[in-house]
Image (cartoon, rainbow, N blue to C red):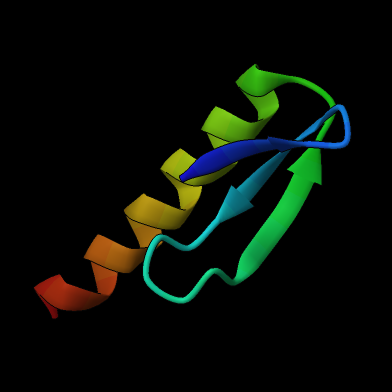
Length: 46
C-alpha cells in the first residue's frame, strides 16, 4: 500500500507494516509497488 507521510509517498506492506522506501512522487511509489508485486508473484510460479 502507499501512504503519504510527511510530504512523501511511502510504500508499506499491508500485513507487516514494513517500509519499502519513500518517494517524492506518487508515480515513483506506484512504480516501486509494481516491482514488489512482480517479484512476489515470480517466486510463487516456481
